[in-house]
Amino acid sequence: MWRRSYLLLLLVRIYFAISPSYLHPDENFQGPEVIADELFLYPSNKTWEWTSSYPIRSVFPLWPVYGIPMILLKWVWAQDDQQNLSPKAIYYLLRVVMFILSFVLEDWAIYELVHAPRHRRQAVILVASSYVTWTYQSHTFSNSIETLLVTWSLVLIERIVREKNYSSMLPCSILSLIIVFGIFNRITFPAFILIPGLQLLPHFLARPFSFLVTVASAVFFTCLAIGTDTAFFRLRDLNTSWTTSFKTVVTNPVITPWNNIRYNTQTSNLALHGLHPRYQHFLVNIPQLLGPALILLLTSLPRLSLWNLRVPFSNPSLLSAITGTAFLSIFPHQEPRFLLPCVPLLLTCIRLPTSSRGRKWFWSSWLVFNTLLGILMGVYHQGGVIPAQLQVPDLLRSSISSPPTNNTTAIPATIFWWKTYPPPTYLLGNAAPFNISTVPLVGLSQPEMLEQVTAALPFPCNSPPPPPHPLTTREAIQNNQPVFLIAPLSSHLFPPSSASTPNTSFLAQARLPSTSQAHSPAERKQDNKDQGRGAEEDNTALELTLMWTYRQHINLDDMDVASDGLWGTLRRLVGRRGIGVWRVERRCPPGSGVGSRRLP
Ligand SMILES: *[C@@H]1O[C@H](CO)[C@@H](O)[C@H](O)[C@H]1NC(C)=O
Ligand SMILES: *[C@@H]1O[C@H](CO)[C@@H](O)[C@H](O)[C@H]1NC(C)=O
Ligand SMILES: *[C@@H]1O[C@H](CO)[C@@H](O)[C@H](O)[C@H]1NC(C)=O
Ligand SMILES: *[C@@H]1O[C@H](CO)[C@@H](O)[C@H](O)[C@H]1NC(C)=O
Ligand SMILES: *[C@@H]1O[C@H](CO)[C@@H](O)[C@H](O)[C@H]1NC(C)=O
Image 1 (cartoon, rainbow, N blue to C red):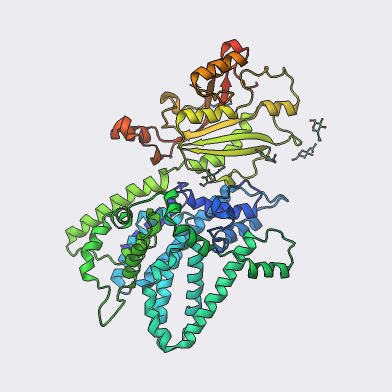
Image 2 (cartoon, rainbow, N blue to C red):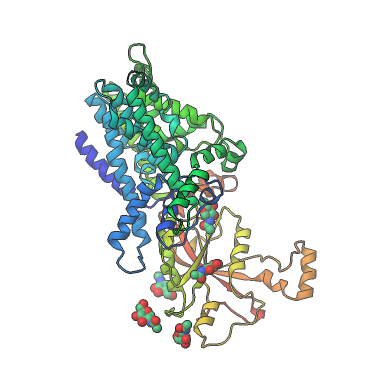
């Protein structure tokens, strides 16, 4: 029975692994985007973590996890000289890699950590049926990698302690590698293994040589990591000679974990990311990750001893999860994904109710909880961002009237993303002949958004009309710069009726920024008189034409419970779910002698 369930759950995991939901911008900008920027000539957006003079993230863990698959794919796939690789293939490859890592390493670690066969099967099934495994763990989060590293550290610590007869050099050096990798991956890694790691002390006291091996390998791997980071951040010039490179590493190394500690210990910095109460992890985040399993965990606790005099560290998994959460609670920025490593560890500690009725209750509530959250987080959560971004180059190509010739200069195109997460820019791939600027407007208000979009359109209404046809290629390009708006269909801006019918247009009134700095109405009036143009600009309408939609998209950041009520908000977000790509054009007022500014 449990084998069949496990196989069925495997299919579920694969399904979620290749569902393009988007849980947090970090899953892209702290990983694939950085490596894709190194390997391909695709546009990229490196965030401040990577560009500041004290970078706080390390590339050392990124190369093996994302770099190697990308390099292999490039090697296998790219056949033309320009090494053009479909960004879609890169995206799905990385998701499949994360799935395989979780399927092999996480499940195997659980198998090693739980000894009684009955509990072991149950733990593996619980982990395989948790929505956290389906969704977060198959996304490219540093937290997902941390889960694998924490569980494997615990496995290795246990092996080292158990093998009393030999000095266990191999497990010791692998443990060193994992610890260094973990610290460079996320600075919070030691929080999870510090206390369980204390069991090594008696072992090391009895076998100093084994301690020496551990320390020596840790020093070696740390140097390797610092060297990798220094090369990445400081030695961009490939012609640097070996001696200069070496000198830079020694005299001016980049130690990202240290920069990270300095950054994160300042509450003013954390405040930029949002401050949470200190109990958020224990009272909100863990329940959100575990759901009904938390109740069983609490009822199982009396039966689990963390510590007894005869067997100290009798439950390292539970110890690691609890002390890790406690350490992380010290910091006031607390997101659920920081606790990913706790989820499999806590699930191994659960003891099912003894009565069959209790079990039935548990399994059904667990199934409902994980199905709902799995579908919400794994399919719908910002689910249209990645498909839309992959579609953008094609939509741009279909939107211009004159087919680009070989020698056309790059056509500037501006894509505004409103009320969505910032999209991964590398997914645009080689969008020739377009030079795409991606502008995430995130949560800007509607008037501000329309103002920015209007400012990007070519030809203000008061400019002379475009030259008559036939245009030269260059002029056609100048006159034809596409501007797109990508936003959830649930936005108040879009009329509900047209929201999912392709090729429908509607007009939106934009209040244009006044051409001068004047902002009060009186000043603006004065301005109009002087220049004779502000008046018509204020009337300018934007024509938005829906080009493409994708229905599996819900964004939870666009709640407006205050004015719509809870039910109204839910009806809007769920009923009108989806993301749309709109082409934006200017519709000038009749007096100005120009109609729509789109060329035939
Ligand atoms: C780049 O990514 C960051 C991180 O999410 C985002 O805040 C920023 O708006 C993005 N910029 C562009 C141009 O995409
Ligand atoms: C334009 O590109 C095509 C293939 O991309 C090539 O066959 C053709 O020779 C090019 N024409 C010019 C004028 O460069
Ligand atoms: C680009 O193509 C046009 C014809 O389509 C030609 O007149 C022009 O000389 C070409 N420019 C270059 C730089 O090759
Ligand atoms: C693309 O546009 C940016 C400015 O928007 C410009 O700096 C860059 O040189 C352009 N790239 C190409 C290939 O034209
Ligand atoms: C929308 O318009 C494009 C070109 O203008 C056309 O190719 C496409 O078939 C239209 N789609 C629908 C559903 O009418």
